[in-house]
Amino acid sequence: MASSGASQWPSNSGNDGISDEQAARLRERARFVRLETIRLISIAKVGHYSSVFSCAEIFSTLYYDTMRIRRGEPGWPERDRFLMGKGHAAVGQFPILADLDFFDRSWLDDYTRLGSPLGDHPDMRKVPGVDFSSGSIGHALSNGVGMALGGRFHGKDFNVFVLLGDGEMQEGQVWEAAISAATHRLGRLVAIVDRNGYQLDGKVDDVAAVEPLDEKWRAFGWEVHEVDGHDVVALANLLRKVKADTGREKPCCIIAKTLKGKGIDYMETEPGWHLGYLAPEDEARAREMILEGAK
Image (tube, rainbow, N blue to C red; front, top):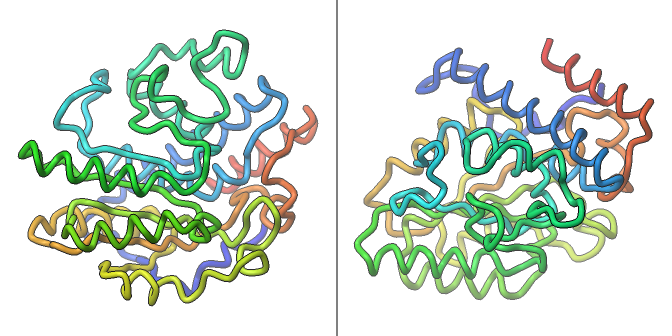
């Protein structure tokens, strides 16, 4: 299997604030996301494997360690909010929402079928636990700004986490939202950029270069951190630190270096898997690779 390719990014070989047991749990939940993504796409016959695989550890860490949520209570008013700019990764979010008892797990078996509330993109009107309906890239951060402002207005202390694709950095609305967030000193707003280097049309920086991302976010008035997006220990410790800093006035951007298709060697090196379908024999091998990676 291909190596992570992210060793040049800040990592954490020691567990610091997160225990070995907790780290193992987060890795297991990331595998769960990948395996369930394969299962659900086999129902739909087409889907976004690689876009989910690049952020599986981010999903796992947010939902099972970072965010304040209550099992079985998707509408709990005090919950932390989560929005996804890259809404096509919803197939990896849905299994977690079912696992948290936000809706019946049998819904997953009808993924994208006629009448199912679970589609290729998340719909907050139909799916409990979805805080934002996304599909058109570029709108999530603006909505996150609105939620953070709303929380402040109502005296709530919830945090707002927004997961963005790196290709999404080419959208002007993202930067308008970034200006607004800094202007209003939204310290409880956290943007996480899934920096996997690819978008639908190829390499992000070949389509429209976005680097230097860290300098751009800082110039827009944000606190910026960089992390290996597949290292659950580094992610958990960083997110815990960011969340604990309740006096911070600057919004926070975390640039997570990831691999598109992480865990499936040929998806890590072939950008064409942004949208695809695994034949049954290939699906079996993909499952083996994910399980082998856990050893």
